[in-house]
Amino acid sequence: MYDQNDTIYALASGLGVAGVAVIRISGAECLTILKKLTTIKKPEPNRAYYATLSLDGTILDKALVLYFHTPHSFTGEDILELQVHGGRGVVQAVCNALSSFKHCRPAERGEFSRRAVINGKMDLTEAEGLLDLIHAETEQQRRQAFAQMDGNLSKLYESWREKLVHHLAYAEAFIDFPEEDIPHEKEQEINSDIQALIDQIQAHLNDERRGERLREGFQIAILGAPNVGKSSLINALTHKEVAIVSQIAGTTRDIVEAHLDVDGFPVILADTAGLRESAEQIEAEGIRRAVKKAEQADLILFVQDATLPKVQKLPKVLLEKRVITIWNKKDLVKRKKTQQGHYISAKTGAGVTALWDEIKQILHDFASNGAVITRERYRVALNECVASLQSAMKAGALELKTEDLRMATRALGRITGRIEVDELLDVIFRDFCIGK
Ligand SMILES: Nc1nc2c(ncn2[C@@H]2O[C@H](COP(=O)(O)OP(=O)(O)OP(=O)(O)O)[C@@H](O)[C@H]2O)c(=O)[nH]1
Ligand SMILES: [Mg+2]
Image 1 (tube, rainbow, N blue to C red):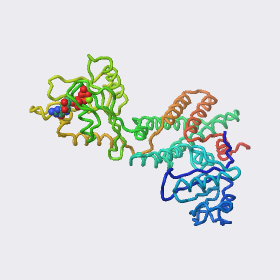
Image 2 (image 1 turned 60 degrees about the vertical axis):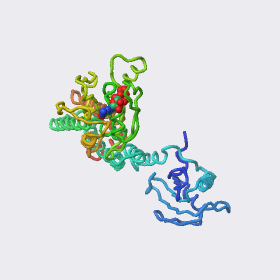
Image 3 (image 1 turned 90 degrees about the vertical axis):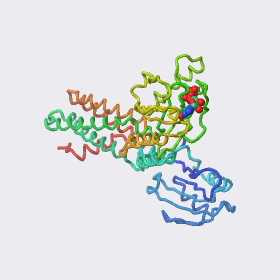
Image 4 (image 1 turned 180 degrees about the vertical axis):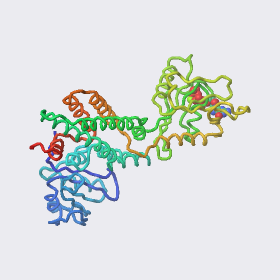
């Protein structure tokens, strides 16, 4: 394990040729480093200095230098930011110079954020929001990540946890002083609070995985019998030759995916092998994958051939899914629109815009303004919390109820990374006169 007392440094901007590169240094050695590399002796925090960086008589670069004084920095430690010229040679020279200082080493992955969490600058959900923000590729992903980094989940989970800590502290106090009975109204108040919390968390959990979907991409699978025009449709929807189109039934075997940014939503559109009974081994494997893909999808575009009298049925496992039925090859049929769904021609492009409009509507309905669960980790902990709260509702003895409340509190604490022991004591001493 690496030493947490070390001063760490890293290139904070991207690697490669650029106008400016930012090298960030965090830890107790910052001032020593600054004094050695520049002529600045007493830096004023949060001020930009233009300085020549040199070590042992060798000039490294001219840089913009910023100093942040502990605890008012990203990590909570002293921080130096060197904005140097963005060439590899410059960055290398400055990093080499930094490595020559005692107790100073390159940072590990995520170590700056880790220190920020340890020093209470942000909690785990905010750190994860920051990570998502760095990886956000579309506008909606950016919004969600920013809100999380800004503390929307943190505030929600902390408000729940604080409520539990409060009741827990109260219950513990009565266990410690068994000669006093917990007042009946107080017990009722605790129970109704717990029930309200169960309802709130369950409503929060019941979100169709919106947050996770937005992080990972909204999955749309194109499904249907062979030759109905699925590959033609993916090409029409993306305006690209993504998949091979041919009049031979069974052309597509593997899944062909296209990644799109649709109104700021990340969308993964998948073309699949045509579904049919009599398929040889390789095609049969393709069909198995097609159905699996559709099972995982958030939306299925079920394509039918409008020229054929026979209507295809969706496989049973997919009956619960969100489906848009599409009647393709409408350029070949004269008869009036009778079936529910979209009549389109993947070949001429007729009806494709209207189809996109419906898909976009679904995406926008799916987007949520509130705080949403963005990681499986939160979902697991929230489910554990609900289970413990439900158990607390049923518990007869105060000791058992207390234990359940403790478990529930811990489950929430695991999400944000906050542990309750000290706080519990704080609440006890603040809200109760134990020494009476
Ligand atoms: N006239 C007309 N022909 C179409 C249309 N869409 C697709 N086709 C034709 O139908 C044939 C099959 O199209 P594909 O897109 O390869 O069909 P598929 O559903 O991907 O077929 P498999 O991959 O075999 O499952 C090709 O000859 C296409 O040119 C359409 O809207 N109108
Ligand atoms: Mg195909």
